[in-house]
Length: 244
Image 1 (cartoon, rainbow, N blue to C red):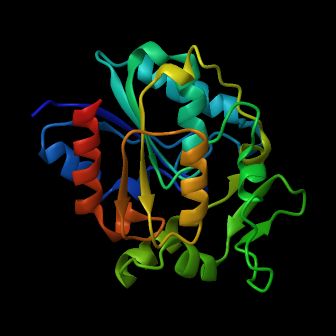
Image 2 (cartoon, one colour; image 1 turned 120 degrees about the vertical axis):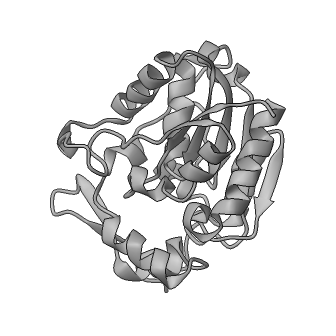
Image 3 (cartoon, rainbow, N blue to C red; image 1 turned 45 degrees about the vertical axis):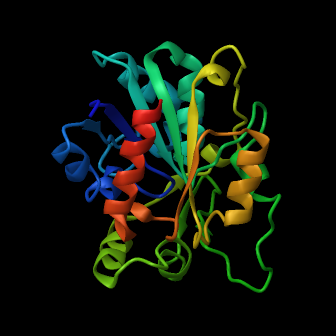
């Protein structure tokens, strides 16, 4: 089996903690794994009002550049836009990109604009609580349970609920700056999640249709397979890594 170096990039409102069930499983198979807190997220003390999407992307690109071998970047949810922008900066150092129920959007597009292409049921309460200055948001307790962790066991659901935190809104509205010459030449794969209520399967498939990934694999899980089905997720990550 070929050993890989994985860098796992968490999604919105999350931190490196969300990979705690995945990292030991990958390491047990001999892979190297890095799962950083993005600046301002998790336990990282960077003030959120100083964070930008480009700051995050360059942080990840620097981490990629520091490794002794090419890496596989895995982005969950909002992490998808971060790994795309990072790949634009260091394409020569990346074996492949894996989008895990993630935003896969083209040059010039934004996460928020992409999400609006599949409007949610207007009768559903909002998942977000936006700060008074509209610079950050948090997710409601109901959304943690019903939107993000709807197939996750109670013990892990409670753990997630105790860890989620604020997200800078700038990450949702900043357009990506991508080129075919850089981002476009990095191989990419997608892991779709059938019971995802945060990024519905119709939206996942629409994004992949616009920016094809090879291969696309499927998990019958919620948005947060790192907690709801870590063994199945790791099997897919390892299989995809071997194919790059």
